Length: 270
Image: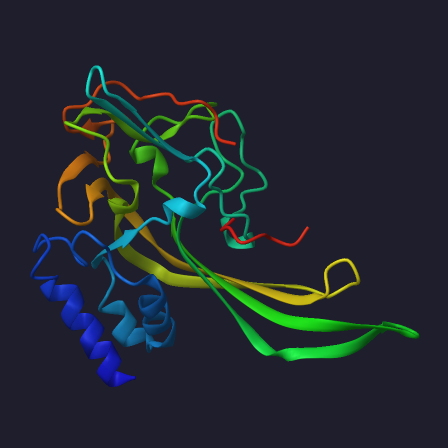
């Protein structure tokens, strides 16, 4: 454990030689699964040493229904938009039941999905769910990893708008390769540093799976959003917090609009 912790710290403070030195993890981002395990197992005095430390994680765009991009070849305009209107953390520690909906959100903390893994915890077994009725039941566990933060409205004004989020229109020579496009979240770890929740669904005849979902959060403050090419390191857009709200830094226009994006959880993050 100590060895892996030292390796992770070395990667954190030194960065990657092939990427921007000031950006932990380079253009690909760091491994949130490794860091969650490291942070959650650290003693409080060691954990406090990471308070305010900068991390960089790639948002899971494949599990982000609010993300969209569009390219106008005639004008060379790339529109990037990552909607945040529904990225609320519905956990007890994030809930503000007395919030004034005119000026506050019921769920204080917001999330960005970073990674999801799943595994079979045991071989399927035959179970008698009801007298005389047996079915083969799988035991499946899924782990979803998120960034949790409360400073979303440092990046743009709070508004009743399903298209509110990160993004802008930028001029580029061509449509980025989708597989290489990364949305990096620069993030400072803050107390209480991490959280985890556990939900279990019992198998039934319509869905013979004992399903356990664990949501794991690294908690902190969002510092910056970057859209980059993970192969070349080209930065399409940087968005920084601003007291005046939405303030992308690039050859950007006003906040873009795109067409709206389209039981037990499915394979996506929630």
